[in-house]
Length: 183
Image 1: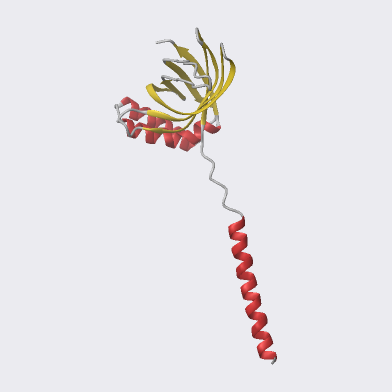
Image 2 (image 1 turned 90 degrees about the horizontal axis):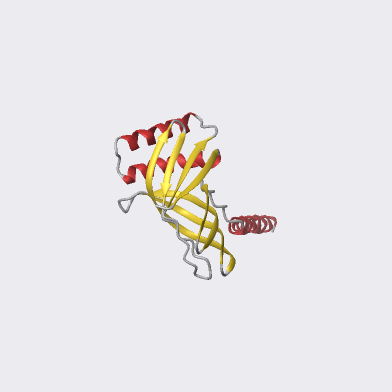
């Protein structure tokens, strides 16, 4: 009888621990890994209205043959319909890229925010100078590799790979300034 009671207790303890562990595993899903993002300020005025916001780049792609910044365009438009929020996915071609010292120069465009009213705001191109405040050894090496790839005319896929490696360094320690061109 004692042996049977001991076996039942062991069985219940084993089943109880297994159920508890399963519940604990299923109850709290793993938090998603944060992705690096580079926020570039963007604002302009035109005859149809104004836009003030940011282009947040989460990655670069070179798969379609041209270098493209992928992310989100978010901000506020103001037009004859009044102020409206914009928060939309963005795939913006990189028109020019250069590295001078520790500054990455990007020219991107066009940008076309789509507010709910449908007002057609448009910016042909804008430039951003991205200057990392404090690059560690790895970040400096990545920036030098990008500069070398640009200088030798590397394909868009290689530039995208180099930019994606550099993105966490840029996102964490960057002073970015933007300006617009009508083009």
